[in-house]
Length: 238
Image (cartoon, rainbow, N blue to C red):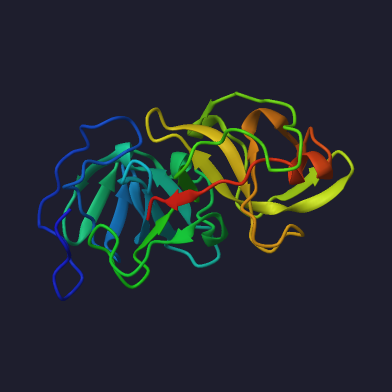
């Protein structure tokens, strides 16, 4: 994607999304602050774009509602019908727009200084991480715990950044993000936030051991089994 000009505007024309569903083409650009219209009227303005750092592609637009009392919404990129420097038109009615997920910043990570041509907080990323080293073997001095090999498409994982995590014998931390296989974009592990009681060790829990119960994430392992999981080396897609 070409960088924005000094005024923060992108190109005057925008290519229609032609890639896989949910991911915009690399050449696509949207001006932060552009007005957004639906098929039956004005919806709000573009607050930021949301990027998949593993695929390195735009997936959603975060639209601030025109009334401050209303929540902003996350709109899938494939619903963009047309985009220019001043206005973006969506293939969605207001009623459909209001059913999209709320655009809560807590779900996302900062996109960095200049992510895909967006700066000043114009882009945020999903909390996805790629593996820098294979997850295999055990920690020295410990037996390997249960093996889980499940892999789930990212769109089917009901886990959010910040969700509390409980082992079978108590609380162990909260969710930092998801570990995603670059080859097929399936989630393989959930990553605990830094600062949990294992100190600096990065703890990635196999997705097959994880279930959601109400507002919590439950892990089918004890604290000791989680501690015995092999350490991982992660690379952020950002």
